[in-house]
Length: 220
Image 1 (cartoon, rainbow, N blue to C red):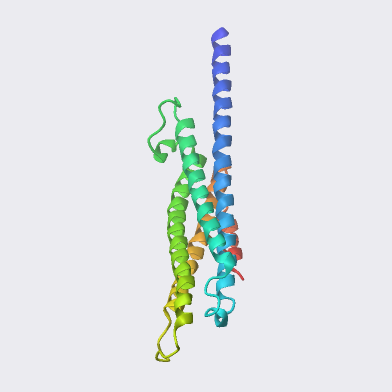
Image 2 (image 1 turned 135 degrees about the horizontal axis):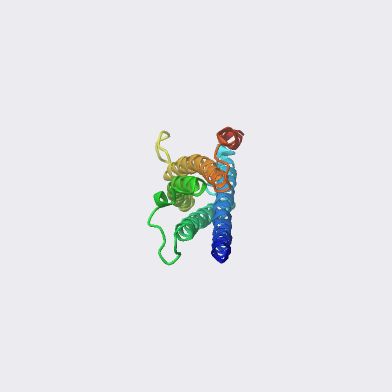
């Protein structure tokens, strides 16, 4: 009888420990999703600003809010990646028989389908976040160069050939293209982290809901 009671106590303790780390894991996954949603909003708003009036590009190649928005997007992507890394760290330690000897990879968590699925989707999301961050940094570089080159354009006497494109405009166009690529990756990133959140909370059959969210993000 005492052995049965002891076994029950061990099982209760195991459940309590698991519920604790899983709660922390879920929190980090949700934080990653929140940061990615913020990134999408920043990039979408930024793209609307820089493409709103092409006729103003020569006078204002980089709106004052551009650098702040892109810097914020880069920071949010960094925070998203940090949350994804923390979620993985928590899962590998929490899912191990002993936290002192964490599991080596997400494949070792296959006994917990929800956590395994969430980690798999977070891994894909991390690759997207890294790619989006690279695009954001390139956009910052091009748009920043456009702002500096505007000074040179202002000093030109206008004697260039009419078919020549100013360096300022070229940098601006390159910046917009990089921004579009970053936004495209951000859309996929939002879907990936939403899928990870669904998996983390045990909802792994929400493909239709994810498709609807992607359509909503892409719509004007």
